[in-house]
Image: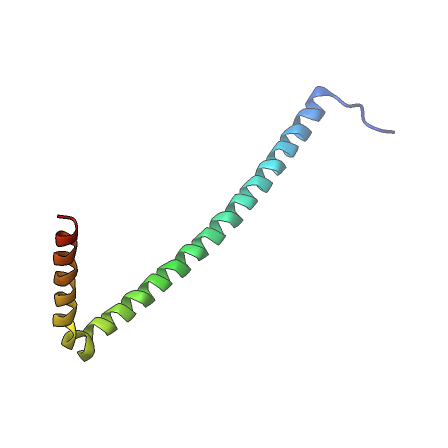
Length: 86
C-alpha cells in the first residue's frame, strides 16, 4: 500500500530538489573558478618567463653596446616628426 501524500511529505521533497539543484549550480561554478585559476596561473608563469627574457636581453653586452644607437634613432625620429608636422 502506498503512503498518502501530505503537505509535509512534499515539502521536504521540494526542499531536497531545491538543494540538489543548488549543489549542481555550485559544482558548475566551482569547476569554472578552478579553470579560471589555472588559466591565471599559466598567464602569471608566462609573464614571469617574458620578464626574465627581457632582463637577460637588457643585461647582454650587445644591448648595452647598442644603447647609443637606439637613443640616436629616437632623437632622429623625434626631430623628423617635429619638422614634418611643423
